[in-house]
Length: 131
Image 1 (cartoon, helix red, strand yellow):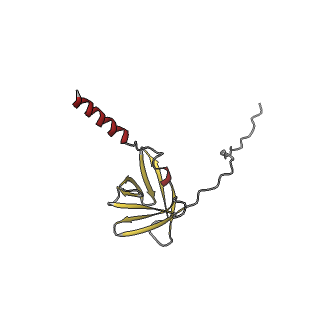
Image 2 (cartoon, helix red, strand yellow):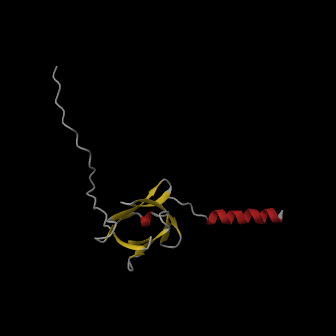
Image 3 (cartoon, helix red, strand yellow):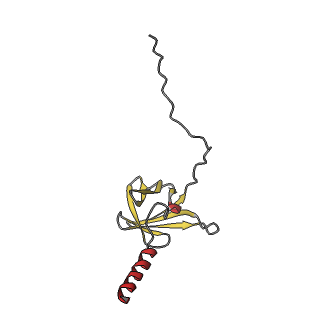
Protein backbone atom coordinates (compact mmCIF):
# COMPACT_ATOMS: atom_id res chain seq x y z
CA UNK A 1 0.00 0.00 0.00
CA UNK A 2 2.78 2.41 0.93
CA UNK A 3 4.67 1.51 -2.23
CA UNK A 4 1.67 2.21 -4.50
CA UNK A 5 1.05 5.52 -2.72
CA UNK A 6 4.71 6.49 -3.21
CA UNK A 7 4.59 5.56 -6.91
CA UNK A 8 1.37 7.52 -7.37
CA UNK A 9 2.85 10.55 -5.61
CA UNK A 10 5.99 10.43 -7.78
CA UNK A 11 3.92 10.17 -10.95
CA UNK A 12 1.79 13.12 -9.87
CA UNK A 13 4.88 15.24 -9.24
CA UNK A 14 6.37 14.20 -12.59
CA UNK A 15 3.21 15.07 -14.54
CA UNK A 16 2.76 18.37 -12.74
CA UNK A 17 6.36 19.30 -13.53
CA UNK A 18 5.94 18.75 -17.25
CA UNK A 19 5.07 21.82 -19.26
CA UNK A 20 3.19 21.20 -22.46
CA UNK A 21 4.86 22.56 -25.55
CA UNK A 22 2.32 24.86 -27.08
CA UNK A 23 2.36 28.10 -28.96
CA UNK A 24 2.18 30.28 -25.82
CA UNK A 25 5.35 28.84 -24.27
CA UNK A 26 7.51 30.18 -27.12
CA UNK A 27 5.59 33.37 -27.96
CA UNK A 28 8.45 35.67 -26.95
CA UNK A 29 10.65 34.16 -29.68
CA UNK A 30 8.16 34.76 -32.54
CA UNK A 31 8.85 37.43 -35.09
CA UNK A 32 10.81 38.51 -38.11
CA UNK A 33 14.56 38.99 -38.03
CA UNK A 34 16.68 40.93 -40.53
CA UNK A 35 20.26 39.99 -41.41
CA UNK A 36 23.03 42.41 -42.34
CA UNK A 37 23.58 43.10 -46.03
CA UNK A 38 25.93 40.87 -47.96
CA UNK A 39 25.18 37.57 -46.25
CA UNK A 40 23.47 34.50 -47.63
CA UNK A 41 20.21 35.40 -45.83
CA UNK A 42 18.26 38.64 -45.73
CA UNK A 43 15.36 37.69 -43.49
CA UNK A 44 14.16 34.93 -41.17
CA UNK A 45 11.00 34.37 -39.22
CA UNK A 46 10.28 32.29 -36.15
CA UNK A 47 6.77 30.92 -35.93
CA UNK A 48 4.62 28.09 -34.60
CA UNK A 49 3.60 25.57 -37.27
CA UNK A 50 2.12 22.09 -36.84
CA UNK A 51 2.75 22.04 -33.07
CA UNK A 52 6.44 22.85 -33.53
CA UNK A 53 8.60 25.96 -33.43
CA UNK A 54 10.12 26.70 -36.87
CA UNK A 55 12.79 28.95 -38.30
CA UNK A 56 11.88 29.96 -41.86
CA UNK A 57 14.37 31.56 -44.26
CA UNK A 58 14.81 31.91 -48.00
CA UNK A 59 16.84 28.68 -47.80
CA UNK A 60 13.94 26.72 -46.28
CA UNK A 61 12.34 25.74 -42.98
CA UNK A 62 13.94 24.06 -39.97
CA UNK A 63 12.21 22.80 -36.85
CA UNK A 64 13.66 24.06 -33.57
CA UNK A 65 14.17 22.11 -30.34
CA UNK A 66 14.94 23.94 -27.10
CA UNK A 67 18.35 23.06 -25.64
CA UNK A 68 18.87 25.98 -23.26
CA UNK A 69 17.29 29.14 -21.90
CA UNK A 70 17.52 31.06 -25.19
CA UNK A 71 19.09 28.45 -27.45
CA UNK A 72 17.63 25.91 -29.85
CA UNK A 73 18.99 23.21 -32.08
CA UNK A 74 17.70 23.30 -35.64
CA UNK A 75 16.99 20.31 -37.82
CA UNK A 76 19.08 21.67 -40.70
CA UNK A 77 22.78 20.68 -40.71
CA UNK A 78 23.01 20.33 -36.92
CA UNK A 79 22.72 24.08 -36.53
CA UNK A 80 22.08 26.11 -33.40
CA UNK A 81 20.07 29.29 -32.93
CA UNK A 82 20.83 31.55 -29.97
CA UNK A 83 18.45 34.41 -29.22
CA UNK A 84 19.82 37.71 -27.91
CA UNK A 85 18.02 39.83 -25.31
CA UNK A 86 18.07 43.56 -24.71
CA UNK A 87 19.97 44.08 -21.45
CA UNK A 88 17.47 46.57 -20.03
CA UNK A 89 14.10 45.20 -21.17
CA UNK A 90 15.06 41.50 -21.33
CA UNK A 91 13.03 41.22 -24.55
CA UNK A 92 14.33 39.32 -27.59
CA UNK A 93 16.37 41.75 -29.73
CA UNK A 94 17.98 39.42 -32.25
CA UNK A 95 19.35 35.99 -32.99
CA UNK A 96 22.53 34.28 -34.13
CA UNK A 97 22.49 31.15 -36.29
CA UNK A 98 25.50 28.83 -36.14
CA UNK A 99 25.34 26.45 -39.12
CA UNK A 100 27.86 24.76 -41.45
CA UNK A 101 30.76 26.87 -40.17
CA UNK A 102 28.89 30.18 -40.60
CA UNK A 103 27.80 32.65 -37.95
CA UNK A 104 24.77 34.67 -39.08
CA UNK A 105 23.58 37.59 -36.93
CA UNK A 106 20.14 39.16 -37.27
CA UNK A 107 18.27 41.93 -35.48
CA UNK A 108 14.59 41.61 -34.63
CA UNK A 109 12.47 43.65 -37.03
CA UNK A 110 10.08 46.14 -35.53
CA UNK A 111 6.47 44.95 -35.80
CA UNK A 112 4.28 46.94 -38.14
CA UNK A 113 2.12 49.41 -36.29
CA UNK A 114 -1.57 48.68 -36.55
CA UNK A 115 -4.03 51.44 -37.33
CA UNK A 116 -6.80 49.45 -35.71
CA UNK A 117 -8.60 49.23 -39.03
CA UNK A 118 -9.31 45.98 -40.78
CA UNK A 119 -8.35 45.93 -44.43
CA UNK A 120 -10.75 44.07 -46.64
CA UNK A 121 -9.79 42.94 -50.11
CA UNK A 122 -10.99 45.31 -52.80
CA UNK A 123 -13.94 44.04 -54.79
CA UNK A 124 -13.60 43.96 -58.51
CA UNK A 125 -16.16 46.23 -60.11
CA UNK A 126 -18.70 44.37 -62.18
CA UNK A 127 -21.13 45.91 -64.62
CA UNK A 128 -24.73 45.99 -63.52
CA UNK A 129 -26.88 43.68 -65.57
CA UNK A 130 -30.00 45.39 -66.91
CA UNK A 131 -32.80 43.16 -68.19
